Image (tube, rainbow, N blue to C red; front, side):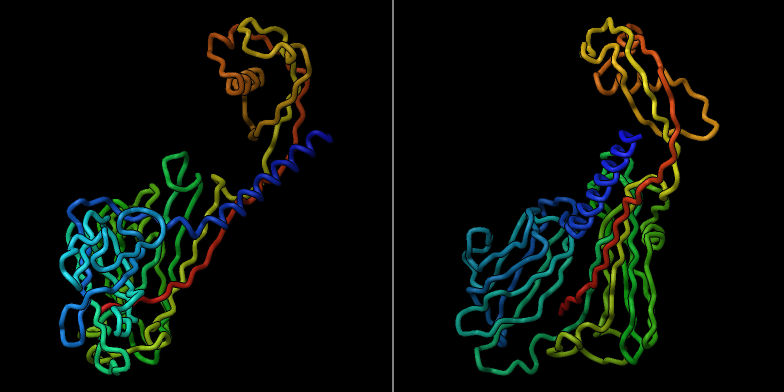
Length: 376
């Protein structure tokens, strides 16, 4: 019984360690982007408030459009700029399909930075984003209109049973909650983009003042036309158009919004993952004591022959099974034995004892609040 207690303790430590590893790494699962497209490109145009091209700006792009980790940075006329001979125009070729956030991190000398980040979508084509800079000390009362506010959330839905997925085997679910914290109705358009797959059509939702709605994996699968249990991942894009008839309360484009004004909605994403095939429950475990009488295959170490050995394996109620076959299967896995090798091995079952244990809940959760991004 002391050996059996040690085994349970070791299993518990391993499972708890797995949970902490998963939680620490869960937020990093979203670094992959979409399918590689050689013909795709991103062009960034820098202008003065008089629409004159302005050189020398530096930008950051998230995620990295060339598929590497981290944030991509580029300066006008630098090595990765395909338009080196044109001040004010930066072109990056060979980028991946996906949605990108572009921010101006350094303005041209003598100019104030354009503080509004821009969101673009690349889909087997070229995407263009424009930034406007004014001379330092000059007010920007009418510059940088905000036409759209966008929330982009990663989703993970379905089950991974072996090593076919980017995550460890388990069951994954995503739940988005959207709360309209304004005192007027807000209309949103949401769609799903599947990793290495298509983008869905947009769905219109109207949120009354101080009301909420939710999006689950079931909603995402329905929109993508994927109703099976296969694992799918990608992004949900929630767009709040400010300059269309969908938002009559706010009229035309908004100017120079502060952080609180931009964040019209409260969007939170709740991720759950369980690495067990079923929910925690009591299980029956057979502890088998045996010894190997002979081994004509020569693959089992000699010191293991004719010594009492123990294994513990899960069992089921009303299960009719061959205990000797179970033992031989364990030996085959450990010592890489063929069916012919197993025929040359004789084992003797010495004792079988039954124990009841509880599967440890290898369960992880994560809650993320999505910050808004603006585009013109």
